[in-house]
Length: 274
Image (cartoon, rainbow, N blue to C red; front, side, top):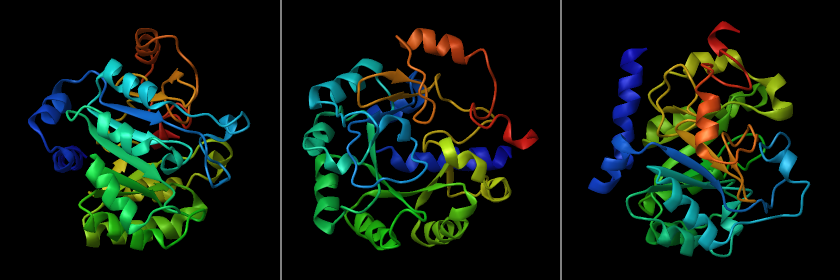
């Protein structure tokens, strides 16, 4: 377990391109922000972690709001998410204005990706693209991952641990091994919690290509949400997790609350013991 943790931690260095990023890697109080720049999406997937937010009128952050949150919390890493972030009209300008000391990634359902878009994302300053794999997404995303790699982007597959996604999980692992990608190993939320494939999760959680919940957290028996990882909604609300939407007025009160507990996941508890 310790060897696996260190191996994953060392593997994270591949994302660091500048001395200023390395500095934040070691010293930033907030390691990562999940930043929902929009709740507009061209998909309507069952079990989406934003499902309880999609009933509202579609919202999105302005460029000034998005960049402002990053400058305020000074994270090592920010993941632009949604909704589908490729639908945000100011996406490239947002990426360009994020401080170069921050590692920038983006998660997408892949449906809008083209070779030209992967090149534009790289030119804007994107470091890593997270492409979803699963029964809700086209298998053509594997080919689109290769386009992103050819454009010079780091590539992660984002998969959710459910029984219905087991085939896609195994495909993602095989492809990640061959292409030197990583995998974001997501725990299910909402209606999908009942379909959690615990057996597959425990079998592969220590695999060297796997990152649990966040690519800058190698896993150490508790989730970093609310302490070192935060989520900003497309309404500009501060919450601890993209799948746990309790709104806090400030970071201090959130961290105080979350330091009281020591569980692997607030949705699923201590998975090893459950």
